[in-house]
Amino acid sequence: MEKPDKHQLNDHTSAHAGTSGDASGNHAGHAPSEAVTWAAAAQATLHCLTGCAIGEVLGMVIGTALGLHNAGTVVLAVALAFVFGYALTMRGVLRAGLSLRAAFGVALAADTVSIAVMEVLDNSVMIFVPGAMDAGLTSGLFWGALAFSLVVAFVLTTPINRWMIGRGKGHAVVHQYHH
Image (cartoon, rainbow, N blue to C red):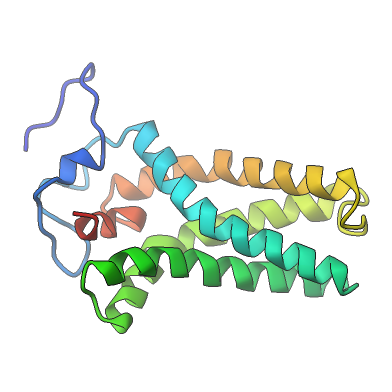
C-alpha cells in the first residue's frame, strides 16, 4: 500500500479493508511508519473510553453509595474500568471467531495501556478536585468532576493511542478482526 500524500484522508480503519494479520498485530497494509490520522486515534480512544467510562462511573457510584473510603472507591472504579474495557473489546473479537483465551489476549494487547493511562488521569482529576470524592450522588460537584475527568482522560490519551497505532500496537491489533 502506498502512503497517502499529506492532503489525502488516511482513515485508519479503511486502510485495513481486506488485510490479514499475524499474531503480533502487524498486519499487511499497516507498516508501523504509516501515518495515523487524529480521527482514527480519537475513534480508538472513544471505543476504549466507552468501556472504561462504564466501569469508572459504576465504580464511583457504587463506592460513593456504599460510603467506601476514597481509596476503596478508586480501586473499585479502576477494576471495573478494566473489566468493562476488556469486555467490550472481547465482544467484538469473539464475534470474529476467536477463542475466549485468544480474545482476552487481543484485549490485553489492544487496551491495557490506553485504559491504564485513562484511569490514572480520570482518577487523578476526581482525587484533586476539592470535595469531588466526598460529594454525594445527588451533588453536581460529583457528576461534574466525573464528567470532566473523562474528558481529560480522552483528550490526553488520544495522542498516546495515535502514537501506538502508528507503531502497530494498541488498537491496531484489533483492526484485523473488525472485517
